[in-house]
Amino acid sequence: MVYAVNSTEVEMSTNFHLEGFRNPVAGVTSYILEDRQHALSSEVMNSRDEPQRITWGAQPAGITGREFKFTFRPLSVTLLELKLSR
Image 1 (cartoon, rainbow, N blue to C red):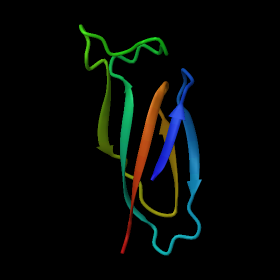
Image 2: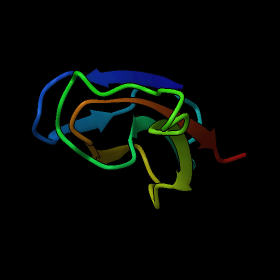
Image 3: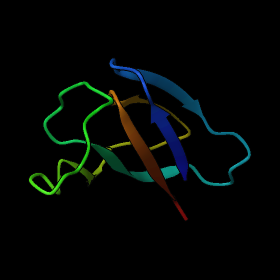
């Protein structure tokens, strides 16, 4: 698993090179906590009127192999769950 916080208002891309793993990555699921309205403000929060304003989403990232690039969304917390091939 890889955890990342992008506290900026712009996307941040990172190249990953995985060494020391016996098997390459067979797939990645990304779990992202962010403002669903994408207001690009660190001041937004959940409230009584908008209890799901900041929420998690999960999706396959379409990544395989030992090297990959991932772009982290602005003002988000991301968990990349790496599934290794057998």
